Image (cartoon, rainbow, N blue to C red; front, side, top):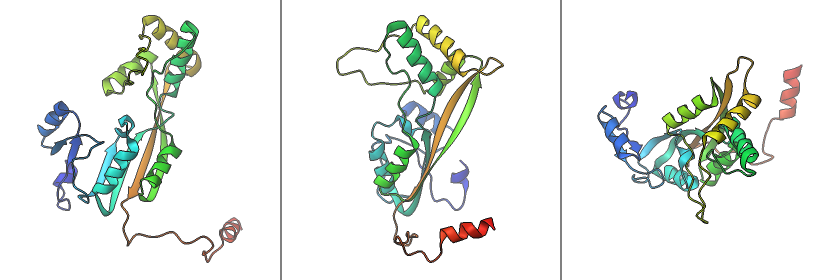
Length: 237
């Protein structure tokens, strides 16, 4: 809303996959386009800025989506985004694996896979963003119990979603027995002295520019006119 009210902004388009959520957002006055991040319904070179906030970890074709984002940007347009990284919910992932192995002698995935920082940084380069930057932020949230964490994840719509295996064998149901054992392991390994448990959320922040001829270009190797070693030496004197 703040962007759309600025006199410096021509127009703002928000993309929403869910028609129900799109209708809710429209009722607040936000201009919504109902569509899919993996098939952007926009013309090439349409935007000066594209942002994505905590949704790209759900994409099946992340490289393809990032190529499309670069294409809908004008030359020298900016992409800013963030998504959950590979260390997100590492405590929950570890506890589920250990609990299922203890009870059944084998484990199936219970937490969605997420990319690492190096993967995403490399992806920015592969999809031909100029001046790419990837950084990471880790946030620790504490809960009274692992079940409170699961309630929050359900409320956020961040429950794991896996395609059914090719062999047709479904994952083992999430029973009370499994939840109980998972909670015991979680408390044993990831609790603080006050009894509350920790949950890690790793957020990867991304920025990159659509290529343009007037952007700064890196110098050729060996063309530097100043010595980094000399600069460090002087700083220490």
